[in-house]
Image 1 (tube, rainbow, N blue to C red):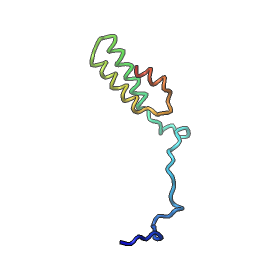
Image 2: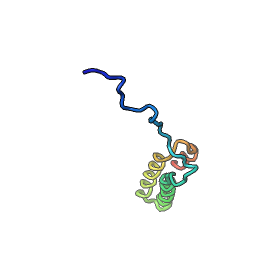
Image 3: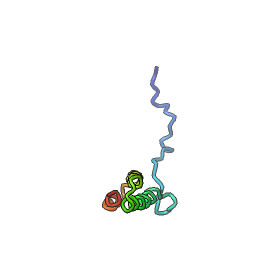
Image 4: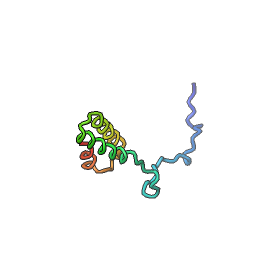
Length: 85
């Protein structure tokens, strides 16, 4: 088995580093899932607290976990923790 270092088929000038698309120029790339899950979590938590329905409270906890997992790291930490609580 011989190593052939000079016969590398990759072209160095064709290698491009990945850059994620900018959401400021294209707002359709932003994922609304954390916002919807946050809203659903608030609705289910109010139903769980006011009507004393345990299944509503568990669904609210589940929605808040999904919202927390899908949120971006650049979002406000205080707002995320308050919505989670």
